[in-house]
Image (cartoon, rainbow, N blue to C red):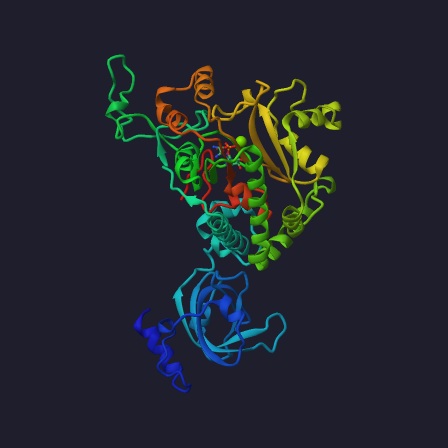
Length: 502
Ligand code: 4AD
Ligand code: MG
């Protein structure tokens, strides 16, 4: 801070007992801690961003430690007009003063300011965040400033708490966190929607004799991609450490412009030796219940805010599309009720005989056994038929990945999807095919690159074991826990088709 401003404040303060105080040098208290302390005139310093400044007197300050603001009161005639004019929405301040019980309604305590320093000015004319409601679409365009809003700071605090809870859940149960690679030569899902990683000169790539790009000259001496899933790699560690998980970013170059898809998302993938599909389903259920309960126990303030926010959003929807339960009720509901478990075939029968199918209301009608279920079908089962989370298992082999364990019926595999209200598929997983011959046969049927999967097949050659695992889409979980309807609003910097700003 410039010398002149400092000395100006010091002059102003000559009559008070903090003569030598330069507020930015003082130890900072967090607003969250202050609000749970007893205000008795103690001298404290807080630093944060101005949300509003009313009547040239009342500064509402937020430092992100909590959704609550601290009211800082500047007595009339303490500061000159030039200083007061710099206290604008968005400006960053350091304020020092006495923490006292608030005489006014609306807050239990306030800070009687005796010294104030402006750490960062904010031109009110140009600052895009005005003290009013902005649309989520608009805020996405200024994602670098979203953390200054109540909604996004609340969502990101909840996101943090959930990441912490994920590790706590597994650590408490003796699982080991394995960091699987981000750059990989394998395509775990066999889906082909991958982002290429290369250092070749795209304007002039080296070619082999037949005129194809010669990836032998690329950085890794082969074709590489960003990972779509850490599953295959974490399986190798489950085959030695028994209970493992990975939690990292994953990438999919699908052109899906939906409220549930991102091109870059985080996934939690536990993988356990000696678990069959039933054990796998039980783990998934207790994991999701734990996470919902953790949010209720540790994020009450933010969830209260998000609950009200979601209720307002619901009111703008037509009555028949409003959800029956509020955000907090939904979390309690998940943590307290058993999930409905049924096979794909049972679900198929329910859907085939359902009203929307008979009346041709589904966009994709359910006719033949074996069709992949669309989000409209999943949501019908969860929101209309069972009205609770559902786990479907034993899916047709043809619509699932090569590594899933083949069932005796010769048609289905031991796959499972967990379906949630408002979200649809939140978890996908399976028991893995641990029998070498079965796996090779499947790889050949699907014409997958058997040679490149040599290490994966080795696991079935050398001490194979029954094992299972699943993947939880972290952002879909955060959508459920925060009630945010668009997945782009639960990750700090969303990546989706046509957008990689920031
Ligand atoms: O069902 P998926 O594709 O399964 C796997 O990747 C397995 N390898 C997991 C495993 O068994 N270890 O993805 C798992 C979950 C989905 O249920 C969904 O929640 C989320 O990841 N997901 C996405 N989330 C955001 N954007 C996308 N494009 C997503 N694709 C999948
Ligand atoms: Mg899936």
